[in-house]
Amino acid sequence: MEKTSFLSEVKLINLPKIEDPRGNLSFLEEFSHVPFKINRTYWIFDVPGGQVRGGHSFRQQEEFIIAISGSFDVVVDDGKEKKIYSLNRSYYGLFIPAGIWRQMENFSTNSVAVVVSSTTFSSEDYIRDYEEFLKFKNSQ
Ligand code: TYD
Image (cartoon, rainbow, N blue to C red; front, side, top):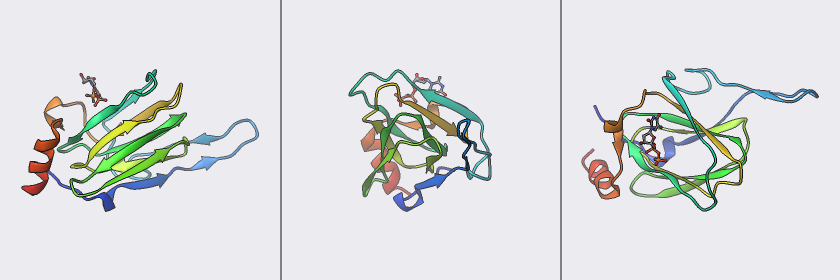
């Protein structure tokens, strides 16, 4: 069953931050800091200046995106409105439910995006065509 979502369901989630003079520590656990079972983690790194990643939506996948180093913007779109979240700290991230179009841009030099996902990789889960995304949203 495909799921649709609204921008109001996209949430910034703070992670624990254990401050220490030796260096700070943060972490996340499934069902607790991220509201789903974790099936995969991937990361995006060495992004050349001006490049854009991830212009697509997912049918099932829920995800949590962290700027583990540096900064970038995540543009989210539910087919009706768009919002830009600037991520620039490793102790919070952006929860994005299924059925949201999202794009990552404005990567700083040496930034690293970590994406924690509720699903293993499936190319069939992607909606890569924006018109198809709008049709999918309007059919829900
Ligand atoms: P993709 O998610 O399409 O990146 P973007 O949306 O930023 O273009 O992934 C790029 C390629 O990497 C694509 O061929 C699929 C592959 N890939 C995997 O094999 N496993 C994964 O977990 C991910 C995220 C991508």
